Image 1: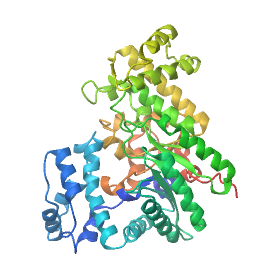
Image 2: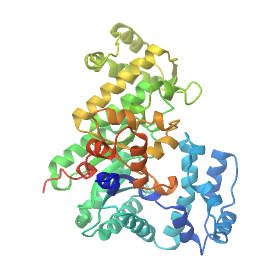
Image 3: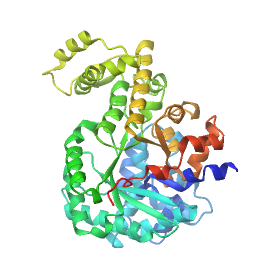
Image 4: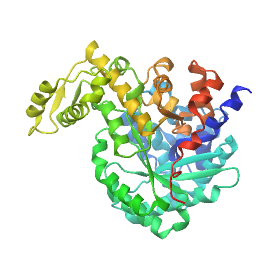
Length: 451
């Protein structure tokens, strides 16, 4: 049996992909070929200038691409490459080119359905057999009618695309700033569209994670748990992007966020770079990286350490209770936006490695799956090279693992490319890697619904 056969399950089951990031450059060009001059590109141009210091001319870029056999210049402004790495702001700036196209189609062509159909057709051609699409609507609870309409249309396109050889499901991405409010709109959508219940299997948290600690979603998870118990036949699972880009906090806090998201109830965690990237490497990515965080985060970390003291100590993390209690008293009553500065030394870095071991162990006990996206982590997560990639730490642990492409159009890579990357850079042959990964179909959302 060859490597392709062994890894077929991983290459045909996609659990971490965003609809909006799935247009390849060729698709984008085809969509705008006849009306790129009428599109309002200001959102892309303004944010690209802010992120890169250059104001591009998209009309000239598309005109050149249409009249040239090469798409390299257009790709340079759309594909997020290794040279762009380490900045979510830059990633979003390039993504905004596609968003301008989406906005034009929504305003001038009646919606997003045709774009989604093209994306799904590409994935069918790639040979994907199961896929969970997720999407963040351009609206939140302040525009409830459009929020519901966007997700209803997206889910219906996905529902209609299914056949005997292709199964697709939909995760509605909730804005981190209003999860409970938008969750109520999701329930309204399900109430009014019972035929889509089988397609809408979960909820997702994505986009910028900095500034939105998992604990801020506690009320949402409590409500979700109650609703799932009341209506098990339409229970919704949660996938949660966390530990992906976290330069606003300490490494300890980034590790804690991954643990907290799982304990709250997320059954799959996206990226979790903070759990697999060596702390010394993480701290070296930027000058004084992770040395400064808000007092509110430091206080939350102290509470966490005191609550998990016994378990952390078993994993080799020293916990000085008296010192932490004294520090906690200092922060109680102080402004939450006050900043704390703490430098790293070899002893602290070693204790963070033990913290990573502890949380990976807890995720395995909780039966939580990590969704690792190799190219995305290298570029957005500022992982310096293949050897440092968190996937190696994940493979060596007992945590369940699924490989995803994330935004394949923006990264110009397919799911098969990502699986091949892991195979190529790990020390496992195809048989061993298949045995370690298993079939990711077993990790799909909605599988535990009452029938």
